[in-house]
Length: 347
Image (cartoon, rainbow, N blue to C red):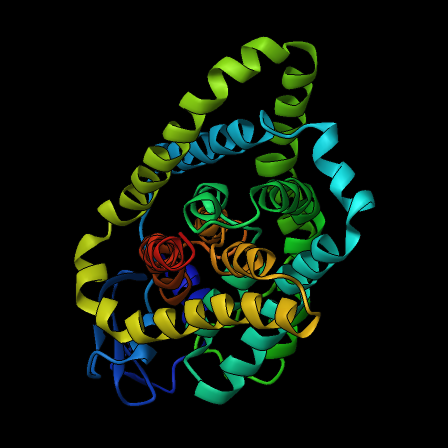
């Protein structure tokens, strides 16, 4: 790491000893040699604060793999989007509007409140806000089916959320992230580039979704034949996606995962609970409540990981990456667990 990069990431030191050792808050030390950083010491216990000082490494090839994988997953989801899926919005608009509100407005807002209550370190807080800003996960339709939910509503919400996320994900993260950042004390300050986020999401979501919808429109028979294999591929690819994100930094993940586990569990529970209580307030039937709970609690954290590892955005900031990666694992476990419970209860 060059000296200029160290200053950009960590800021000016609190003190400099012999021109070679830079100290931050009397705990963190950067050792320099010939104007380059050759060692870093974090003189603190393994606490959440440590994650604000960690950037996870990812090769250019690894980033390319992640981007291509996410694009293929979104293409596969788009193969299942039909014009008739949007008819439910006009035939029975209430559950669709409530579901959209729960996912894109209620969850980000309540996540912001949760962040204010538990006061995690800034990089962890921004990771929570980013996950909440992402659209529903690619396995939500499958889990809704297992849970005896309204599969038609689930497909409609997935279709609408996938398209809306091109704009809503950058908007929500920029709005709530800046609101939080303005009141926080980041160890390493982060500038939220809204235009870069829009550009990245447009490329990763917009183009694959557009091509998938177009393919399904002109080659419906082929799209129908390959949509099921794509569903299987999307689940396997997503797991591989998370593994790939962790592989290069697995020692870090094992060392610090216990620090964020309870936060991810609480955040995911908030998503599921929000998705169930809001339609309850609007007096929707129980099938719709289960569906909206799953759509709100299952997030596309894979998109979050790609954004986090984007060198023009967050460059693998530790707290954000750990939150998104662990969420990507846990929401499958919690989703399948609650689906199993509901399938038995309403069998």
